[in-house]
Image (cartoon, rainbow, N blue to C red):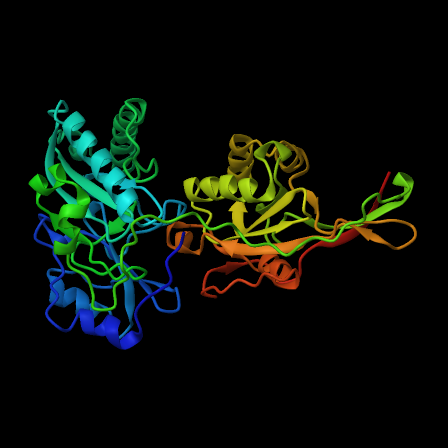
Length: 434
């Protein structure tokens, strides 16, 4: 379940001008962290000056309405001009420190699931007591669905490695080993947060834009009591949603697909329209456009499984269609081909993976089948564009041609147009298959 935004612009601005202090006290040097926030139009912005306190950060908003505010889990020598990992031309940034952060989420947001999240967070806290190389800092209520546990790394040797790239890679490897131990011990944490030195996390003292509850550092002893006993003491905006006792997952609504009961089509004369995965106007970039395996289940189940991968690989907003039997996915991002080859192998999208690996792109059917009598069978119906909340974590630019394709197929994307790659016109062909 995804909550709808609960504030208008005036309420959101008011939160940061009426004395609600943003909490930076837990950071050794706030000026060494990067700060990012999402605006009303879903555009992401980054602070272009060092932030030393809450008032400096509020000034950095520059009149924009910050719906969700985040801070880097790492501290950097120069957090202002921090390049992306895929930016090989920029000078490699110097990592000064990296906090160990565990994100425990139990969606959807309700009292029942928050109690499960509390129990999971407390169990992880007890388990981490055996790890003497890490010092507990605090636990924070995220503002929705769970908790964040923060730890300081007492092993400082790796942060003295002279070569910046080797330093960061060493930190990542150590974090990955710790994360693997945590997961192997059965703790339900987000596998993307802990080991990623470029990750951002919701900033304590700021409002969760979809619930109205404040991300808040809480007393550790509260975690030993049931969530229902103390959740009303948590700070929230006057427009905050009421936390329901429990919530049933909503089914993904699809339009009914009309198909003939017993279609009679000569297999020698099946026509369809196909699109290329190649991002027009680029050398070696492709978008992920593929039919999902039947083994993933009915369309509802297939979409849910695909969204798990979308979150794991930070795809951002993702579009889905169905013919009532199978489901098609489109990630309109310009992804380097070799990277997409590895991703689709892990996702077990075997046909797409093989075509991309051998032919450098894949042709994918985007219509039903048309017989020689010009009758369409199993036409595609749009499901939805899902995972929009993950856009901020995605590092690939949008594919202009695949955005246009999705628009023509009934699912337009609302994006910030500053990070778009390739030409507008998608590569489409009509084929006859035996």
